[in-house]
Length: 217
Image 1 (cartoon, rainbow, N blue to C red):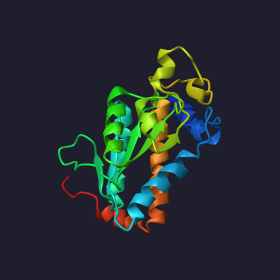
Image 2: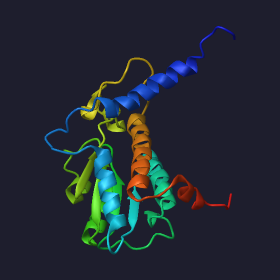
Image 3: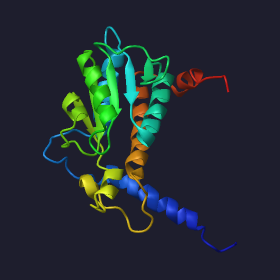
């Protein structure tokens, strides 16, 4: 195949462009004054970790959003933080001084709303990741802080808003990621940046992170 261009390279480039646009040309938050999501997450997590009585970090999301949060939880553990996935059998109770990171890309889900309400009533701080900060959902009402990620979610496909729904940047022409994958891809990239920044803030070296990785593989 000498001299031929691998079509997967062009497709990969288009996908990366869609995710990059979430961070390089985000629209202003609709009817809100929200700081960048990286700033929100680093500030909230480092505050819990650096407290005189450090709290625990919990993560919750449904579907692929939940999978991205599980990946974040793994890296938070590698940073030495007491991090837990809601629903796991070893997850302790949440209480005052703890932090819940919950995701609801389209604004809210019934289960996410309920989990946020329990965390809030237990005295924990709630941070909501969403592409729809104006939704008025139960999770949004519980949130002490919002990490606004202006990317396409599955709701944009369902309601026919087309490109740029949820105030998200217009997608590049070509391949279109299905069913909210831009939001989920942007979550992965955001969380990698969060871990890099937290490593600096908490004074954790790459070697220290690697030392906490499981050897039961």
